[in-house]
Length: 248
Image (cartoon, rainbow, N blue to C red; front, top):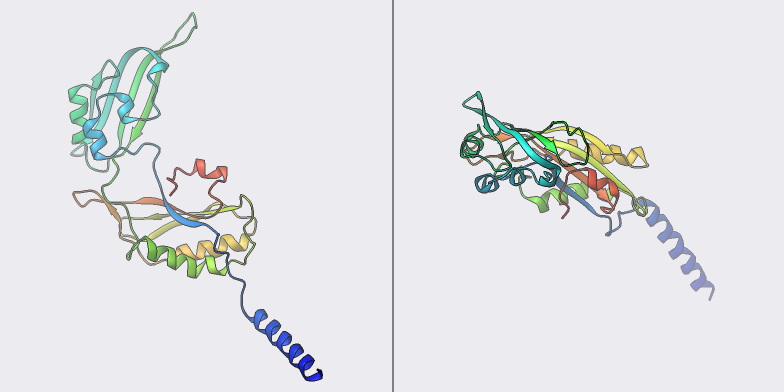
C-alpha cells in the first residue's frame, strides 16, 4: 500500500510539471478567417455590361427618393482623358453605357444626379447626389498556396499562441491590411482592438510577417491594390457590419 501511495504521488508530481511546460492551446472553437474588404460599390464587368439604369450601378440607390430628374451625368476616364455623358432619367443612355464599359480599367467612374426629391414640402428645392465606383477585378489577391495554407500559417503563428478562454462571448479582434500591386503586405493595422493589447500585437506581427501574395488583377493583366481583414473571435459581433466584408 505504501508503495502504491508513493507511485501515485510521483505520477501527480510528474503530470503537474509536464503541464506547466506546455503552453495553453487555443480552443478548436475559436473562429478566425481572412476576408476581403470591398469598396462600398464594386460592380463586376458582367454587372456593368447588363446595367440599364442607375439602380443597376448602385444597389443603395432608391428610385422612390426622386420625384423627377433634372439631369444625370456619368464621368469617366478614357485613355487618360476625362469625359462626361449626360442623361435626364433613371435609365442610362447608350452613350453613358458605352462610356462606362470603355473607361480605363481600374479608374473611378463618377455618377451625378440632379433631381427634385419626393417629399411633401411646399418649396421642393432641387437636390444633387453623387456616387463613384471602380469595376471589381476578375482575379482577387491570393495567398501563394491557397486559402487553406493561409489559415494554417495564421493558426501556427497566431491562433495557437492564444491561451484557451482568452476570447469569450462576442469578443472580436480585427487586423486590416492591404496587398499592393507587387503582392506585398502593406498598411497592416488594428481595425478593431481586443481587450488585451498583447493579443493585438500577436495578430499584427503574424500579418506583417506573412509571405508575399499573388496580387489581384484585371483580365488585361493590370494589377490592383486590395484590402483584407484578419478576424478572430465571434463574427456575430456588430462591428462586422461596418467592415464591408462578406462573411463565409
